[in-house]
Image 1: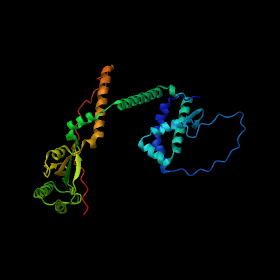
Image 2 (image 1 turned 135 degrees about the horizontal axis):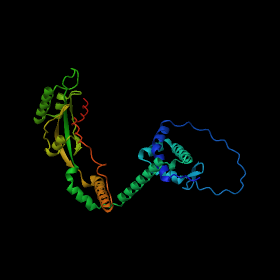
Image 3 (image 1 turned 135 degrees about the vertical axis):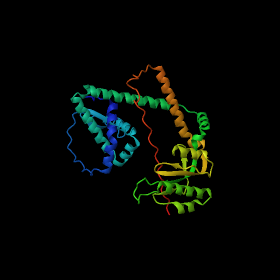
Image 4 (image 1 turned 90 degrees about the vertical axis):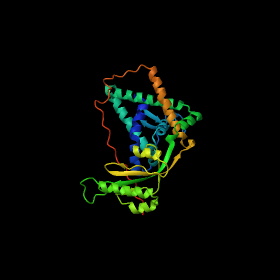
Length: 335
């Protein structure tokens, strides 16, 4: 009996459960099995066909009823595993993969015997899987067909140099104690927190050595200071701090950003711009993505596409923006 389910669907199903099965096997390895006892062989009625070579893709490695799975099919499945699945496979070996495949084939044969493929729900799911896999295959083909020249990379880098600027900054965080908090709650009352932040800024402006400032002001769960500068890229900090990091000159101090939880400010140490060769791969990905989006837009123009605007309408009321969150305080430096 031939398996009625498309081969791609069996592979899709098995890959869903494979990583979990492999991980479980890696954590709970099966005990070593006893060597199989040799069974007496029945006399051959006729000369058997030669077996494929041990490393041949045509070699059958799984049989479930009349369904045969070749080594080539298993190798194809392994090549399509995600990195986590491949890592689990390396730890657990191929046995869990084979057992998982057997489960899928047993269930699919049982489903065939119950004619589940004829039910509307299963038919729709099979068609959805087929559509998704065809779409993914076409997108991968389009992506591989995109050609990016060194000249394009150079032009993009020249036009977007600010995006590849980095800044070395020290971040200063003074934690505020909520109103009505218990006495032993970490942090300072609002007025005391402002006074503490002003004192640190005054010491920085006076040119006090950062080691002395750290020694004088750092307090566990109350005042955090980056004694060693850290490198940031645009967009990593809250908008006001991010703006200051790239607009202020080396050595300058940003205005304090006050949130309900803390007062935060920066000292700008230095600025750098990454060289083109160091960001070429990132630029190529951005150019490729833009070309794919352009190709998708062109494909849509060439195809009759319609959406029911009433059904696909946006939310009835605008969603209010989330309140700003205080940045995570840096770890206190070791004494």
